[in-house]
Structure formats: C-alpha cells, structure tokens
Length: 379
Image (tube, rainbow, N blue to C red; front, side, top):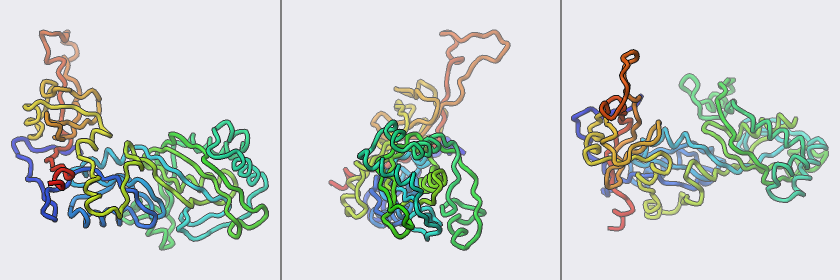
C-alpha cells in the first residue's frame, strides 16, 4: 500500500547516526567479495557507518561477487524501485557435474563424461576466441546455440530449492537442508541478453568430476527475480548433462555498475566518501520532477498536488522522485487519474474550464531529508 503522510503532521526529526555525526542517507555501491552473504555485508556496514536503517537492493549468493547496492537511511525507501531494476552478470557454468545447490558451494550429486559432440562444440567455441558473436556460436556450436536460444525465450523460471524464498514462514534453503521436498512456484522473468564469453573443453571419456572441468562462460542481463543458478541447471538439462554454476559476478544493478563500486574493506572514511547522495541515487533510477516552494510544503504535508505545484511536472505516468527547488528529495509521488467531465454531460475541456484537464498527484513515500555525508565528513 502507498505510504502517505498525515496532512498537518510535521515530518519526524531526522535520526542521527550512532557515531554522533549527521545521519548518512544515500546509496553505497559495494563490490561484494565471494564468501559473505548479503546480510553479512549489510550487518558489517551498519557497524562501520553507525546507522540503524540500512538494507540492500537485490541479494547476492555467498559464492557470488560484484555489485551489491546498499541503501542507507532514507534511501531504504527506494528499495521497491531499485530492487526491481535489471541486473547484469558474468557467469561460468561447469558442464558434466551437478550439485544439490546448483552452485560450487553444494555437494556433488551427479558427474558424467561429456558426450563427444558437446566436447567438440566447446572446443570449437574455445578455438573461436573470446566472446564469439551469436552467428559464430551458431556455426561452431549449433546445439549449444539452441540451448541458449531456449533460455533467451524463457518467460518463467522455477527458483532453486536452495534459495531465500519463504515457504510457510521458513526459508526454502532451510527446508532443503533438512531434507524436505520444496516445490517453488515458477516466476515471471525475462532474459534481456545472453552471450557466450568463452569456453573450455573437458577431458573426453573421463568422469567429469575427476578431470579439468568443461566450462561455458556467459554474459547476461536479466530481469528481477532471475536466478543464474537455475540457468546453469536448465542449460545442462537442455544439453543432456548435469551442470552447476562455479563463478558469478554481478557487473551492474540498474544504473549502478561495478566501476562505481568500492571494496567492502575500503575503510570507514572511504566508504562514507563513496556514499552517493540520496537525490543523485534516486534520480539515477526514477524520473525526476521539481516542486515549487508551495508544492514542497504541500508534499511534505502529504497533501494532493496539481501541476501548478511543480516547476517541472512529472512527465511519466508512474512513480517519480520529487525534488525541492534546492534539489533535495521531498517525496516519491505519482499522478492520479486525470479529471474529466462526467460522461453524457456534453461538457468539453477548454481554456475556460481548466479543472476538466487538471491532474492530481499523490505522495507515495515522504522523505525527511538528511545531510550529505561526504560534505559533513569534510568539516
């Protein structure tokens, strides 16, 4: 449900960080190392930054590395929007060996030699050089190309049993570890792009678990809710062999890229300096509208607004970030349906009846504002 501020109620006093500094608000793009969970990263940053409200926009498995978008303070209100952004990854799939978790952290459940045709196709891709184009893949490895085409056409995906999805109040991975059968519903997903970035062949005729692994390196961009571990298992099934994910790196989450990321062990001052201001972070993922002074006051009170309350009205039918004249985030808001004359009245909109054309705007989430930590740390 949309969150509205009660009219006439002033916003709460801004929270202060537990360090005594002004509370940090913004987005921190972390280059998560392999090993810790996303929850571990958030817990560590909570201690380092001395904040209470902190979260992330899209879980990364412990074995995965790369972009973890961390939301600090008021930026946690952006979570529904930033979590919904597309993600980009590089991934390595091992062919011929399957695990219970579909990744390298699991126990091996199956291993078999690759069929000769698959080993030959991987060899052809390896010989074609790094990142062969789609046409080159189709010529060199037609059956692998067909498996990738099937994945590109995917519209639904069944999440892996070892996932954080809740089933009857319990995490799916906890049930799976306890030996219980987990039946998760398929989710709507979309593969925006999927390309081969490299390959290596295994030892033909040798059990895959005992040989140098046969691998397929991939680059992909996918919608929210897509599990790359499931991709590994599904590709293996299409090719007739067990498979699992041996490496995964998220290179982008929405507008936030690994080039902008800082290491988790960068140190407190470097992490605070890397915090992207709330307005900048919100505007990178949402359309922007600008309020007048009067519109700012009305929005802070949670009142309904009209186009006259904006110096730059929202040009998008969905949610937008509303900034005050100084560029600070006031609210996330969206237009209500346009007002018009009742059917059958014969009334027509015109310059003499502007109310018939007026659009109303409602506050979805209000913001109390916060200090620019990069500025405060320099004082």
